[in-house]
Each structure stands twice: as C-alpha cells, then as structure tokens.
Amino acid sequence: MGQSGVGKTTLGEYILWQQTARGRGWLFIDAKIDRDTRDHLAYMAKVTGREDELYIIDVSDPDNANTYNPVLHGDPDEVASRLMNLIPSAENNPGADHYRQSANHALTVIIAALQASGQLYHFGDLSILLQSDRALENLENDSSRA
Ligand SMILES: Nc1ncnc2c1ncn2[C@@H]1O[C@H](COP(=O)(O)OP(=O)(O)OP(=O)(O)O)[C@@H](O)[C@H]1O
Ligand SMILES: [Mg+2]
Image (cartoon, rainbow, N blue to C red; front, side, top):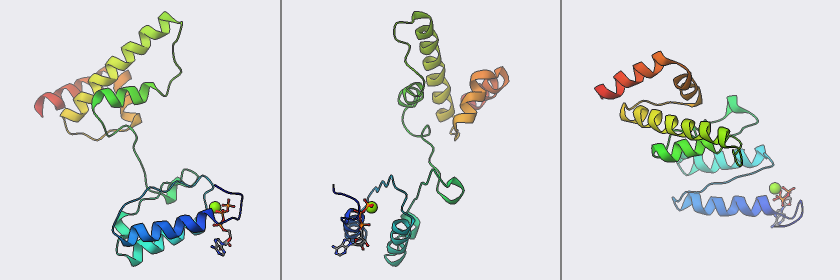
C-alpha cells in the first residue's frame, strides 16, 4: 500500500522476476492497466524461457489478449451456481425463486451432459441449449453415445 509514485509496481515487478526465475507461478492483477509493466512481464517470461506459460487477460483490449472461459471448469453444480450468481437474487419472491431453481436444475443437467460428451462450451452454447429443443436433442444423442 502507498500513494501514487511510491514504488508499488516497481517492487511488484522485482518480486515477480524472482518468482519467475525460480520457476514458480504467480497471478498478477493490475486494476490500472499499465502496459509498460505488461511488457516487462512479457520480457521476463521470454528471457527465462517461459513465454508460453504467460497468459494476459486485458478486458479493455480483448483482441490483443488471451481468453478465459469462466464456465468451462468445475463440476456441473459449481458451474451452474457460478452462472446463477450472475443474475439478481430472488429473495422474497417465490415466483422468481421457482424459475431460478428450474434454471439451476436445467443448467446442472445440461453442463453434466456437455461434460459427459467431452464438448467445450461457452455462454452462447448454454443460451442456445436453454432455448432450443433441437439443440437439447443433439446434446442428448452426443452424451448417450459418449
Ligand atoms: N526503489 C526505488 N528507487 C528509485 N526509484 C524507484 C524505486 N521504486 C520505484 N521507483 C521509481 O518511482 C517511479 C514510480 O514507481 P511505481 O510506478 O512503481 O509507483 P506506484 O506506487 O506503482 O505508483 P502508482 O500508484 O501511480 O501506480 C518510477 O519512475 C520508478 O522507476
Ligand atoms: Mg503502479
């Protein structure tokens, strides 16, 4: 912690150099999007021969960034609840809560079927599967064959 210009980013870079040189891993989150720091980290990954282990996610410049799929990993219950957390809670609204629980159940089953059939998926696929009978039938066939 410290005010602007005190050296937080510079100290962070030194620590990440040490960690990278030791062959260890790290996760660095910078809310300020400092592209010089990004380039320094890319350089240190390169000189330590770890270029293909560096992933950069820059939400302000997605065309020039790695991607991350937040719904791909975890068991079906975990993924479904991660998705349900994205929509507002249905407290004190029994009607909304009913549909919430239906959606949670549907997502859990759909994600289990996708995982059973060994398919990769993203938000768009889940949206289609929740709306299309045919997509569900295809998935049912794929997962029973797998
Ligand atoms: N130990 C140090 N000795 C001399 N100069 C330093 C040291 N640490 C940082 N600096 C210099 O101070 C300046 C600001 O450092 P840095 O960008 O790391 O600050 P910061 O705390 O991350 O600031 P901000 O909150 O604005 O991101 C840079 O020019 C950097 O080179
Ligand atoms: Mg900084």
